[in-house]
Image (tube, rainbow over all chains, first blue to last red; front, top):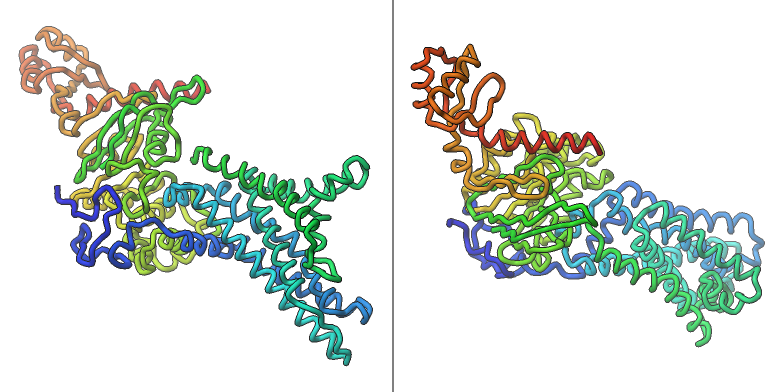
Length: 283
Length: 299
């Protein structure tokens, strides 16, 4: 047997002098670095890269950016000067992003199943829950970045509006930014959860759009559901996060309602989807 | 090293794999042969933890694949060349894997170069790749982590003759340097040229396994005459058992010398007389394939 010591069965660290089959140095990062488990940080970085390295993902990101810029332009041109304030700019910028981010989350998961790249992903990371965890982490990062981008476009819109002379357009940033961050992160995670649960792009996109709307409509029509809706309708529970005045400044009751609705629409499908992903036969 | 012990997989009442056991040693190429639908891919997926077995175990380097901390560094997999995102470039596909495994970026270019995908091809999206190019990309991905074990499912699919020849050399070289290779195929000829060991599977069961030489040797003589009926009579007269007949020839369970003597005694002129070699295995294989294609047609 001519095989060298680096081929042993367990995670034996490769010393700096380790050689590979061809006799040259094994292309390792360093002693012990190569056979260890990939860190969650590394996996999250890979998942973030996957968001942008296909044409679909790349253009979805560009679209999200362009739409939030377009919204600013429309507001600057068409809304009455009195409404051209930072709080309004920022609130309105959240709306289209809140619709597109779940799709980003869905694609991050379902494209793996539809293109069967799970065959590679789960081959390299057989502990599938770690892949899911990395996707969730990447989703959180994407949601936070998105909140900052909308903050940037809203600030730019406010600056342009203030060129008119008025300078009392600004309002507090931390509250709305926190609200936007929570809103965007919840949006992406809901997409990831739906993607994991349905493992099918069109189905997950349609249901993530239709189910909340249907639920809102039912809650609005049937009086018996009205109390339940205030706890479970994400449209209602996330409104305090983004709607001025006082966006992002939630009371304990509002946080509780948000928590319950997020549990129902994000946490439960995420857990069910995780179980399904763990059990699913990959082929 | 790959060890498969009594693996079975049942889907409801259908048994895809039944009691399959084999062993792949370092320094060898094991050909996993069987007609389409025989259970090759299911077995390979069970080895890699993609499909939970109904019974039995499989280990790679003595460990359950799913327990390997960084599997890409120990096992190179190519189970389906079609399972790549068409919207990514070849280089990006490998870069993602390299990042997960923690191998340096230059390894990506080394592997692309090794499988013969040039910079132009590497920069193209996988959508535009031919099946042969996808196989090469899949092989590059398998080699990326510099593993000691390769598990390849029908890697020659879509490769041109030059590509198949090249791949044989690559696998032979990999094994000669101490690596372990398990490769599946439904073509006996394709595997025969490179494998040291053969595991033949049909309808989910192992029907033959052993070293290639062992399986190919001692299978008698293949003999052909201008007058097949006279030949048959001559062989029968000499009391030599005829195993089967192929296109105009006979497969006789005897030394070629004995067969030649029998023909000479009866004055039958021969067209061909040689050790049967793979003809015996081919017979097993053909009977498997025949049954299978009938089943496929009925489905």
